[in-house]
Length: 117
Image (cartoon, rainbow, N blue to C red):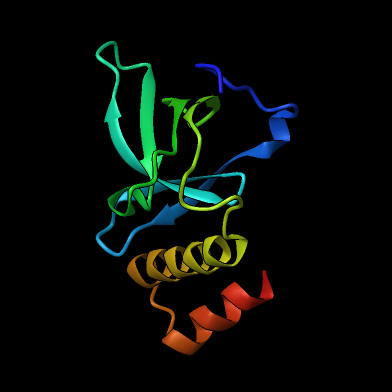
């Protein structure tokens, strides 16, 4: 693979609101989840690594600080395709946590609200 890969369509890059169990922001692209790694020295680019980096995956990508996709820096070695079910589950979990922190809704009301979206 070359140093840079740009998706064919802008719609393939998606910034979704997902937090890890420890509250760290995640980035979803092509059904893969990435953990925030660091920011460039000039502060314009955010570096991300595959969430399975501890299992040896080399998947990396760069985004602009506003979350817009920049480029893929390394292919995934963890699998040939991402995990859309996990992305959906983590996104719903993050919405639940945010609603629980910012509203006075009861647990069942939050669940109903998330399921109705």
